[in-house]
Image 1: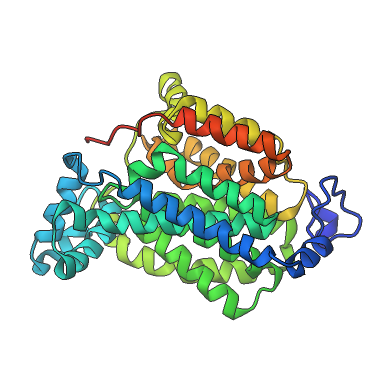
Image 2: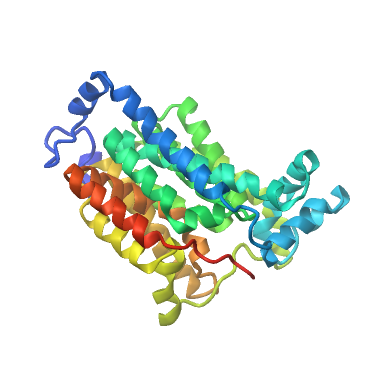
Length: 370
């Protein structure tokens, strides 16, 4: 059975696929050759990275560390003889990250600033990849808009200033999706192996974020079924080390994630916790509606935004794992969809929305204390 017989949505590059926004591949190829476009493509990732770095570095040591960061400091300053304990405790998901910060602290110390710098660098890298991803699937303007929106989100600054693994997981999720697009177009080992590496990094940083693979799998089955076995091989290559590392702790009753049961009040509070301000969640959801998955690459981001959330909701029916931080890795997907939609508007409209986002940003979201 051919891919076209089972496609849920039109595939990128199909001559018969409707493309009302005029974003077909030939025009984008021509656009790359236009004078000045290269500068815009560089700006699409450089501006968001710098802006995220500046906003994240501002007052990075102003707040006292919460309970999670205190646990990170204890792990960073504990002797290497206790490495096994990090992978067998109740909070099993934090074990690989705690091993990472031990090595980092050995080089740069265990001050609040030193322990938070990896998160700052990871979030700045995620912002750069958000811009690059949106530019790849749409236009440099979409990349710049998406990257700037991501940079000014309160949660971007918040988790860039926490010595916790969540910023690294966001970076790994964006990296894996950025690598997925070319890997599916041409599934060669030199493209699939880096993707497997990103999957490995994601699983080590936040195992529950591997729900991203459900969204990737949906895209593979919908658009690139012929490459499904190669994609599965790459996923297995990335997952096997994670499974081998965490299996002993799981057998001893360790947890891969913590959270709550998804009651009505918990679900209602999630958008505000996820984006920092509830109104910002509404703005991004509204923009995403105008970035419907008319093309394959945009559909990947739609699946990234929605499928992991549905998977976590189903899982939370049996295990209390529902929390906004466990969905933080989906925020870039909403931002990319918003940036793509915003790039289709007139300049005045796009600037007005950016001003609204900046206005709604307000004060950064409060820190996790537990």
